[in-house]
Length: 163
Image 1 (cartoon, rainbow, N blue to C red):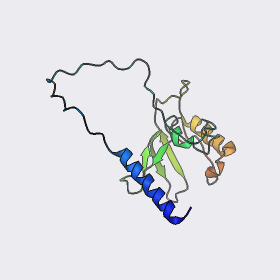
Image 2 (image 1 turned 180 degrees about the vertical axis):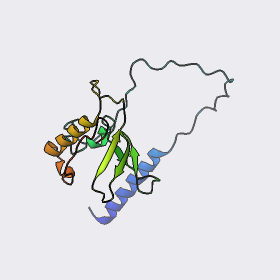
Image 3 (image 1 turned 30 degrees about the vertical axis):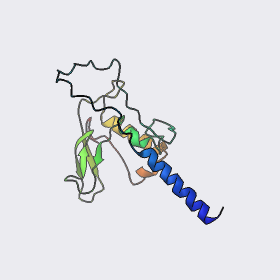
Image 4 (image 1 turned 120 degrees about the horizontal axis):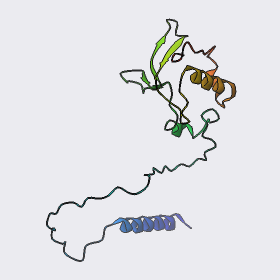
């Protein structure tokens, strides 16, 4: 095909697409406004509401220790961290989550977290310092992304609610 034929074909395709995007003229005059009435009360739908999220990747695990992929974007809806790093420019650098407060040593090498009380796991077990230590130690030992914990020398429970 020569350049002139290709150009003509492209112009015809664009014209066809643009004509398909146009609206249809109404063939009947618009209906008159109905009289105002009270809106009908609607019952909420029966059963649970479901949020569906389209994703192009395959999930491999829901374990926060084994995950190092797409699941991380969704795990924040199921697992809570000690704190969250806020976006740059925020008034505060961190937002407390499972930790209600924390202190950082002058050299920046020791962080002490005070945990939120009365938090339970889904199985009813309490979230406490021992659980935090166990969780981080498991991540350090066997997580796909265990290198993240390489700078951590030790983690210890100071008391029931302090790590």
